[in-house]
Every structure is written in structure tokens, then in C-alpha cells.
Amino acid sequence: MRRLQLVTLLALALLSAGCAAGADMRYRPAASQRAWGAKAPCFAPPVDFRFGVSAGQLVPGQDYASDWRDLSASLVEHAQAAGLSPLPARAGSREQQAEALLAEAKRRAAPLLVFGLSESIVLGAPPQVTYLWFLFGLGPGFVAMAVPMHDEHASAVYRAFVIDPAQGELLGTFTVRSKLHNVANAYSYNPLALLPQAHRDALEELLGQVSQAAQAGFPKREALEDPLAFLVAQGGAGGGGRPATAPPAAAAPAGPPPFLTRWRELQEGVTQVEEVLEKLGKPIVDGPDDRGRRMLFWTHAAPGPSGAVISSSLSVFLRKDGVVDEVRFASTE
Image 1 (tube, rainbow, N blue to C red):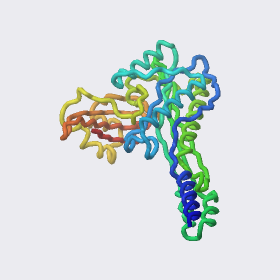
Image 2: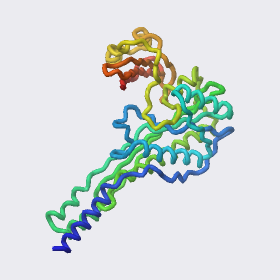
Image 3: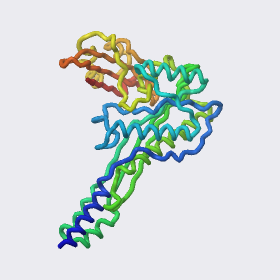
Image 4: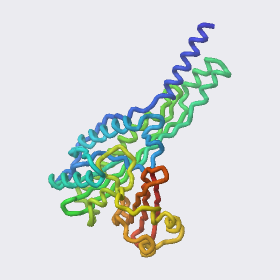
């Protein structure tokens, strides 16, 4: 009986080791030196571009602050190993941080690379077959636990843009997705363990794309009317490990957001940019997004019922023909 109890405890320990482990977001960059054309970009601290992340987590069930600290440290090392020089994080408002980044890049006479995380996903099929030992005994249970039949998936999406602050140009926008898949047994089953590698692979491919564009002289460059407004609107200032949010509007008038009752109408019926501007007036940001679409952006801040400030924002994305492609509304307290 005692031997049976020991074997049972061993089985449970092995099972829990396989499926209950978490993810250490620190990874080894293992990056190669890349060519950057006439002048290597300097890069801003990595950004979490994700908007409205549930509970602010990077890895399910783990502390966001420590996970982001580990991941961003690896991302910085990765970019440095590829031959890029980092810019320090700046204190202050988002506008002040963006202004400092642009000023430092201009002082160095180098393009400014801003990159960060857009999506992080982990999926797995729980190894419930391992519980067969309850029905058929320990022997078949151990055999079942050793059979690789449990799918593990991890995916990460990174995006980047490069700005020439001296010339007022957007040199390029880049987006990559990495996907990892593994078939594990119950002892090794741990989908979260794939996540750091997915992040590493995504950034490696992203840096490769930027490097190729740099060596070609950034052939897809376009004029940027206001680099500061663009950088703030993209959430690319400061490198804080927070989901990207809209820039605040402290001077906005009190009361409900003027677009709150109209955004559904925009989403459902209004199709032309002229109609949008007629209904909502001049946006605070009017410029390209990371996909090359024209982005119109409005924001509003006002005290809520609890006394806390409620910030609302509306983003309208237009195709090149001026037709509305996407509408996003967000409100956070």
C-alpha cells in the first residue's frame, strides 16, 4: 500500500511538472549582426502596443510587471546584438517622452526605430488522457503520459515603424507574426514555455525586414506632417510596459464625449471621409497608421460618476480612396 502511495505521488508530481509550469519571459537573443545601410537606427524602449489587455497580463496567471520587465530586457539585448543603439526611457507625459526620443534621434543624426508587441497568444490541448491510470492502473497511465499527443501553440505579433525626425519622414512600417507548434507528452506539456521563443522569432524577423529596408534606402518612405503627433498616437513613446492608450486631452470640455452617440452611426453608415469630418470636426491627429491607412483620431476626458477621469477615444481608419475601413471606440477609467 505504501509503495502504491509513493508511485501515485510520483505520477502526480510528474504530471504537474509537465502541465503546471509557467513561462520565464527572459530569453537568449542569439541574434546576428545586421547591416543597416548608411546609418543604423537608434531604437526607443520596447512598447506594449496592445490595447485593452485583460488584467494587463502578458502571460496568463503571471505578474505583468515582472514579465514585461524580463521580456523588454531581452528585446533590448536582441536589438543591440543586431547592431542598433538603444535610447533611454524618459520620464514625463507621453508627449514629453516622444519629444525627447525624437530630439535625441535628431541629435544623433539617426533614424528612430520604435518596435513593440501587438499580440501574444498561447494555446494548448490539456493532457486529460493522462488520467487513464485512474481507470486502468498505473502501468497504462505511465505509458499514456509518455505518448506525444498534446498540441501546444504559441504566437507573437510585433510591429515597428521608423521615423526620420530631421526630414520629417516615415521611413517604413513593419509587422510580423511568428508561430510555434509542438506535440508534447504529459511530462513535457507546457505551452507557455513556447512563448519566449515566439517573441524572439518575431523580433528577429522584424529586425531582418527593417535591415533590408534600410539597406535599400527605405524605398517606401513618405512625408510625415507631424512626427511628434504620429509617435504619440501610435503609443510609441517612453517604452512603458503598459497597453497603448490614446493621448490624454486635459483641456477637453466637460460633459459626455461629443462623439459618444455618433460612433455607432459612423461604424454602420458613414463611408466617406468628408462625412466623418462634417459630423465630428477636426481630429487631433490626422496621419498614417502602421498599415499605411489614414487615421483620424479624437479624444475626450471628463470626470465620471465616481470622480475618476474617464478618457474616451475614437479612431477612424480610411483607405487610400477616402472610404472608412475601420472604426474603433474606447473608453477607460
